[in-house]
Length: 318
Image 1 (cartoon, rainbow, N blue to C red):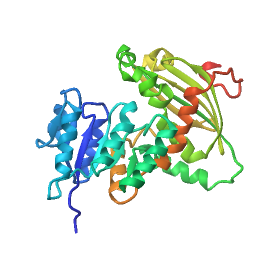
Image 2 (image 1 turned 180 degrees about the horizontal axis):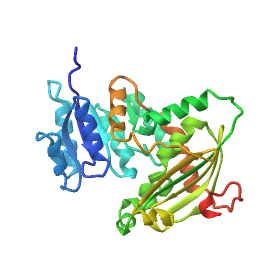
Image 3 (image 1 turned 90 degrees about the horizontal axis):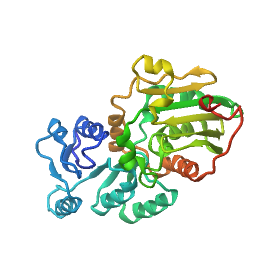
Image 4 (image 1 turned 90 degrees about the vertical axis):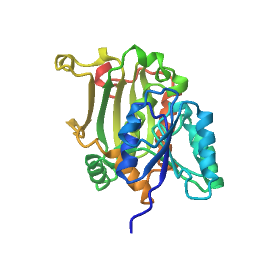
């Protein structure tokens, strides 16, 4: 017997990542019934439904959601998908639980570890659930690496180099993404899902260092239970290698494991849909799944810069 479609609301409909959530809602045979964004450049909604109640003011969106909650029939919002700026995630998750919905939130779930504790209390009080989009954990190649590493000897350590450069223009630094108080900085904004992936595969964080930090770039070293990780993250196009410029590329994503490139560039198209299916089936990634990476990026954000050494420094800052 087919399950009755669930009603979804979307916060942050005008953002880059929102269409992946719209697609996941549609592809899991559910309904997007309401959306909010301070910008009204959201014609993308018509690709999914002509019946979405849209708001540019959160107060009116809030009132609409509350009205739906109080209707006699099952018109209430069952899930709120959150694609808003990082610093608003905590408040928007609280909104979802307050209207009796479960929250499905983009990364990072919150900026600070103590926010997770407060949200855990709200889960208990409301009986609702909070889910995080950790889509790399459902990527087939990453699952295969996870299973391979977990089948190995507990004493083996791997050497990992993570390099992620995704070029951004001046707009980035003018927007909320360039404000560390709102985005959490480079390691949080573009690195948290990679850190979550590495912790999930190679175990808990034992030690971390920061070797380079500015508005556009961060680099450092993390020792995990089963890996030594040198990492470099940047939104500065000047950090791209010359061969990338020559090929007209604006992004470089590379992970090497013991000197060999780990290839996972394919298979990203429908990962949000996979996560949604798992949530709707009673699975999904909750608060505790997000905790280790949130702890790490917070510690990196507040750590002093050290010089490291030739072994721990990423090759790009040797």
